[in-house]
Every structure is written in C-alpha cells, then in structure tokens.
Image 1 (tube, helix red, strand yellow):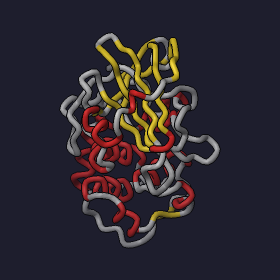
Image 2 (image 1 turned 135 degrees about the horizontal axis):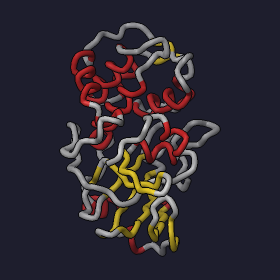
Image 3 (image 1 turned 30 degrees about the vertical axis):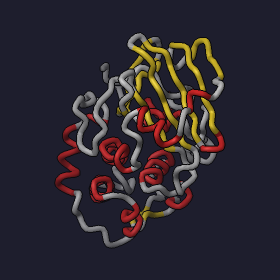
Image 4 (image 1 turned 45 degrees about the vertical axis):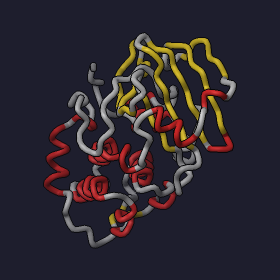
Length: 256
C-alpha cells in the first residue's frame, strides 16, 4: 500500500466519495490484524499500540474538556463511545468510557491521557477504533453469517450502477429499509466485494458498517479511488468519512 503524504487528507477526500471496493481480507479480531497497515496511517503505527499499552490503565477521574478538539475528531470519539456528536460538545466524562468493552476502553483512555491542549489524541482514537471495532460491534464475520442473521438480502431487486467512480467497477445496491440494511456489491478482478451498512443498529442513530472481501470474510480495509489510483484504506475510518453528514457531523448517511 502506498502511504498517503499525510493522515489528514482522508478528512477532505471523504467529503466526495463513498466507500467499498476491492478488499484484502483479514481475520476479524480485536487484536492487531494479521496484515498490518503501513505506518503512514495511525491504524498501522506500532508506536501508537505501545502508547496504549503504557497508558491504557491511566486513571481518569475528572471530565476532560473537548472545547478545543476539532469537530471531526470529537465526532469520531463520540462514535467510538456510541454517543451522538452533540453529547461531547463540551467534555467527555469518565463514566462515558464504561459504555464500551475493555479493549476499546483502554485505547480511548490512553487517547485522553496522552492528550495535548486539544483534549484528545485523535490518532490514538483511530488506532483503538480500528483494532476493536469489528468485535465491539459484533459484526457478522462472514457473508454466510450475515445471511443467517438477516435472510436472503440478494433476492431484493438491486439498483445497478454501470460504473461506480469511487470503486472503479460496476456496483449493485440492495436496500432493505424495513431491516435498516443496505448492501453494496462491487465487481472486482478477484471476485465480488461487499459493503454492508446498518442504519438502525446503534443507540446514537449512526450507521454500523462492515466490508467483506471476495472470500466472503469480514475485513478491516477497503480499496478506494484516490486520484487516479485505488488506495487500500482502513475500515471503518475511511468509510465513515464518506458516510457522514457535513452539517451535523453524524455518521448516518446511508448513500453518500
């Protein structure tokens, strides 16, 4: 994977494009994925894992001000805690961390302990969310497991897109609004890649999402167009950027 020149370009890029495409499948796990990302991204920075190991048990006894935290970083922290962005407009409380499991909680605790004047270390939030999101949200680990949970979603008549620009491939969109389920299937060189969005699965009103590779297994990445190339980017972060409402900062846009 080619590392981007900066980890911040994703915030601008995400305003324009959706997310899902050819993926490299890795086993769903709450630990570091077997195929790590380039260290140019927070998701692949081993130094951040060391910070979490060192600060994950740091005491947090007082609320932490988030007034100076950039809106996108604050929204991502809220998403990790399954809270709406407006709940963290001013501060995060120690009790808020109890909303998530131990692994993600340690990562977010380290992000707050390592904060500078901004209030939270956003790269540590990204690293922790990437490591723990799939298990924290109990996502189906295979497409077969998804079918067992929701039924034959592929029997719905899809909307066909001849060429999806962000995916650089044909795409089929299956919507099951009564289940809050939306499935996008892209045709890649190695087979079909699937992105699943749930719109009614979370207490904060945001979406949950999952990406599946051609082997039908849950993965932690997606290939998306950037410039003239496809870049392998981390899920859920890269996908969330595309599925956010730029006015409310909620990650609740089903079809970007």
